Length: 114
Image (tube, rainbow, N blue to C red):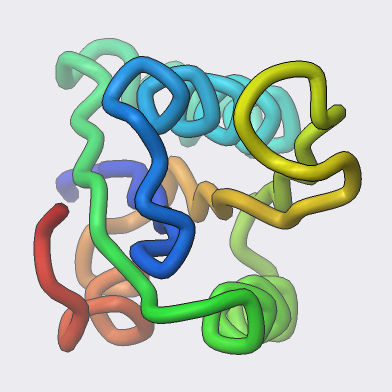
């Protein structure tokens, strides 16, 4: 079985590359900390595969986060502190997994790469 993590980032925010990378990293770490230990171990052994995909806006981001929770996938929703380029409280990214690639793809397979 293959494992991966998917990170969703809002395209409407038009974040600078460095800010986008930081938000993706925050989401990735938070979701990994919530993952099942056995899944986490296997994912790490497979190289910690990650895919970054885009969603259009906050509503879509939250929708995918809720669907991931409903599927019992480890996930995290990142809300920015507002210390740099966006307002405090802005929801920027969601990480889903690590978990079974097929399970995650059933939820996020229609989204496009950043």
